[in-house]
Image (cartoon, rainbow, N blue to C red; front, side, top):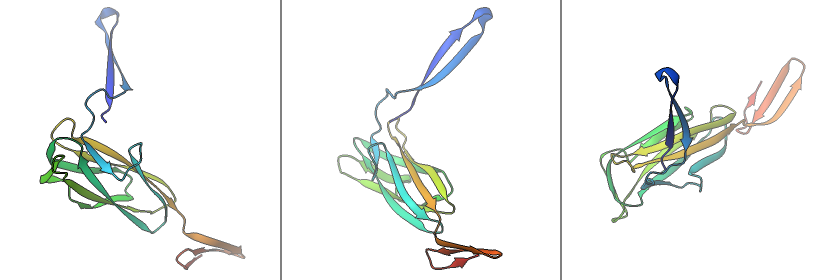
Amino acid sequence: MGVLVRTLTVVAAAGLVLLVTAPGEATGPPSMLSWSPTTSDGSYDYGMVTDGQTVSQTFTLTSGAGRFKGLAVTLAGADAFSITADGCSGAKTMLDARSNTTCSVTVVYAATAVGSDRATLTATGTKREASTILALSATGRTGVTAVSAGGFDTCALTSAGAVKC
């Protein structure tokens, strides 16, 4: 689904023109491309991932109608997300709803800190309706299973069995 920006033009005294923009509902044709797996709101959550660990997910791009080629896939957002395999980008990739062809992209999340990370996976073609966005999210969590403090030291036991002081 596209994003529509409505523009209101106001002409004030002395010929001053003000442009005001506001987001609105998309009214153009819906995207003919879609990612899976995804939730009903067009997102995918990697869940909680321990600091220092990685989780990989392969996403399949499908054409709901029409034929598309010359696709480009991009990933924007937190550096913790990265594309490790892209079978969709390039002039030779062809998606065709009639022949049920698909392509796939693998995105890895590598937790590097505690907290939420977000990114967007976008596929864009040369036709207006050939664009789709998948919102990605994940939460990095600490790998500490126990903490001990005493004297001049505080030590933590990680889920990998290491002790850090």
